[in-house]
Each structure stands twice: as C-alpha cells, then as structure tokens.
Amino acid sequence: MRAFNAELSKLFSLPGMWLAFLIGAFAPAAIAALDSIAEKEEIIAGVSIRLSEVGYIGLGLGVQGIIILGVLAVSSEYLTESSESGGGNQITTSLTVVSSRFHFLLAKAGAVTVTSALLSIVAILATVSATNLILGEYAPAFEASRLIGVVCYWTFTALLAFGITVLTKNGMIPLTVLIINSSVVTVSYLLTKVTKLAFYLPDRAGTDMLMSGGFHTPFTGGLIMFAWVAVLFIIADIVFDRRDVAS
Amino acid sequence: MLLYNENHNRKEVLWLLTINNLVKHRGKQEILSGVSFKARPGRVTGFLGPNGAGKSSTLRILLGLDRATSGSALINGVPFAELQNPLATVGAALDGFGAHRMRTGRAHLRWIARAAGLSRSRVEEVLEIVDLTKVAGKRVGNYSLGMGRRLGMAAALLGDPKILVLDEPVNGLDPEGIRWIRTFLRERAASGKTVLLSSHLMGELAETVDDVVIINHGKVVAEGTLEEVIGNHATLEEAFFALTSEHAGDAV
Image (cartoon, rainbow over all chains, first blue to last red; front, side, top):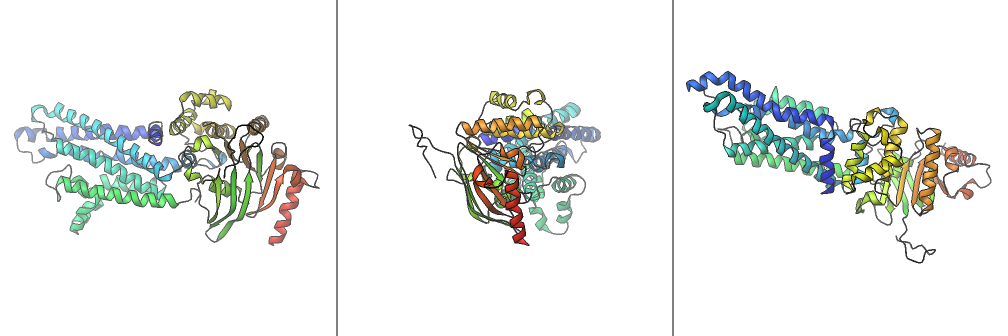
C-alpha cells in the first residue's frame, strides 16, 4: 500500500503527466463536439448512419493521453541524468526504497490502473456533456455497458503501454508505435483485411467493448484484451526481476 | 548473522554488512572475481580502488540492484530483497542524483517518504540536515552537482537507517561539503551505526575512515584497519598505489 501511494505521488508530481491528463480528459470531448457539429443536420433529419458512434469515436481516439501516462510511468524511471551529474537514474532510488521488485511493479501498475480509470470517467463525463450540449434532445443515449467498456479499454491500453515500456526501458519506441497505431495508421485494422486472427489483437478486441457490431461481443472483446494485459505483465515481471539495473 | 555488543548491558543487535566471495560476469568480462569483506557497526569502512575496479558493482549487488553471478552480499544476514523496511535499514546514495530532473527536490523526497510510511515533516528535517531547504522547491534539473549529491544524501537519511552505503560521496562536493560529510559520517559511526563508502580519492578518505578495503581488478588486495593497511608506507595514498600497481604488474 505504501509503495502504491508512492507511485501515485510520483505520477502526480511529474509535469509530463499533466499533458497526459489534459489530452486524456479533454481531447475526447473536443473530438466528439466536432463530430456532433458535423453530423448534426443529418442526425436531426434522422438520416445519420453514425448516430450510435457519436461520442465513442472521441473516446476511442482519446486513448493517446492514456498511452502517454502508461509509458511515462515507466520511462521516467529510466531517464538518464546529465553526464555531469553522474548519469544516474531514478530507478536505483526506487528499488532501494522498495525491496521487492514484484511489489514495485505491482504498485506502479496499480497506480496506472487507478489513474487511467479515473481519467476515463472524467473523459466520459466531458464527452457526454459536450454531445448533449450540441445535439440537445437528439443526442444519442449512452449505454452504461458501453461506457464501462470505455473505462476498461482505457485502463487496459494504459497497462499495455506500461508493460511494453518495462521491456524497452525507453519511452520513445512504445510511444511512437502506440500513438501512430491508435490514430494515424491502425496496423491491426489493416491486418483484419488479411486474416481473421487480427481480430484477436488487443486493440481490435478492445474496441469491440465500445463500438457496436464488432467481431466479438463486448464482453469477449474485453476478456481478450485483458488476457493480453495479463500475459504482458507476467513477461514484464519476469524480465524486470532478472534484469541488472545497471545494464 | 546477528552479533551482540558485549560492551552494552542490554543486548543490542549489530548491523553488519557481509560480502562473501562475490563473482560478477558481464558478458565475457569478469568484473568481480571473489570479493569478500565486512563492514562493521560503529566504524566507517572505506572501500577504495581505481575507477573500474569493481566498487560500484559490489555496492549495487549489495543493494539488490544487480545480481551476482555467485557469492553473496548480506545485510545483517539477509539479502537486500528480503529486508522488511529497507529505508529504515539501509540508506543508499549511488552515482548521480537518483532523481527525475523535472521533479522538485521536495517532491522527490516526498514520494520516497510515502514509500516508507514517513511523515512530510521528516522530509523537511532531512532537507534541513543537508542544507537544501532553500532550493527544495526547484526542479532537480536545475541543481548543481553538489546540490544533487546532497539530495541523494537526504534520500539516504530519510529513514534514519542503521547502515549507510555511499558511492563516491565526496565527488562533486566543494571543500566545505567534504568537511561536512566527513564530520557527519564520523558522528554516524560514533553513534554505533555502520557506514560503508566507496572512493577513489585517498587523501579525502584517510581522515574519515576506520577500516579500509582496497579493491583492484575485481579482487580485494588489502583489508584491515587504517593503520594496518598503511603499514610501513608514509600515507594511505602511498599504500594504495603500492598495492594497486603491484597487482597491475601481475596482470600484465
């Protein structure tokens, strides 16, 4: 519990995290607002085919903030100080404060989980308010089950980013790959054109929790994504436990 | 291994560091080839050697940061990973500041305090001890080398540990800082605590340490009290060069 408190304290005292919070909390609402404005006339005329997606698009794309959070939680530990200060890093301090590496990793993952779940709730509230403000009585009804899907999707995405960064130690690779994959070019989406197996990739399966008419039911989609998170955490823990901090 | 101090009426647990036959390979290189020594309570032990001799590797294994290929490094009989409350047992300051440059000094110490269940007032106390109170609200990235080293010391002292392990503590300190750390470490030892520090600066150490361990090319070449290690040489520095150059000669 103490280690968990310490990890929360670390997250909130890092300026880069506030960028993650800002993007995570408000980007989805902004996207949803733009989308609502664009679709407004068709929705009012009753001819929009995208009514059920309004809002969720923003919440799907808003994971960028959460990716930054998951990556930064780990990469900040490995950020090397300038050479004139001796080239140390924070991870040496972290591991001399908490003696069990497993507890350290668990505490950090716990802090990331709680923070991303809270952040997704803030994002949902902002998004629902934004759509209601613009579409008024025409705003789509947000179903509780899909909103829970959003919370899970965000949290699992943060944990995937976290786990990958434990393996790479450096934030640049996971940050670039994950952000591009979730915004510009979705590799897993392209792969679904080639093989059905791609629907079992974590981000594909995960989006089925919030988008209607997916390959999996929302529950199965969530389960598949969670399985990815669990396996990645186990691998990350094994690697982290055996690793020399100096190497 | 628990020892009891016979000089005291009440039985007091002593805080001992035991390094036993440590071997460490990194790739094909052998960094440590059977390092053994002890650091005892109530004494300042100086762990000396040229750069690259294996000092930091030994300390990192002792603190559970790196794994030994074989051998053991024990804190009061147990490896670091088995310590219940590490911060109250061992305070460590290794290379660099050990802090993220975007955090303030105070925020850095506060998360450490949280991890050990210590109060915020303890953070202010250690800031006062190392004389960083005035700059505690500044980001660590703006600290000078001396200030960063003192922040590392503050972190090591937070839990008021029985044992201090310091890697090159006088590096980057100004003469006043060196004098301060010397007095401070002498006081810690006088109150029965264990202090192990590494250094490649002989002159600074001769006045601080009680016991000396000299390491060269991953092997301990001398161990004993300061007087024993100096032996017939005029100074610790001369003894050090005599011992380390002999071994350098052997290796060729």
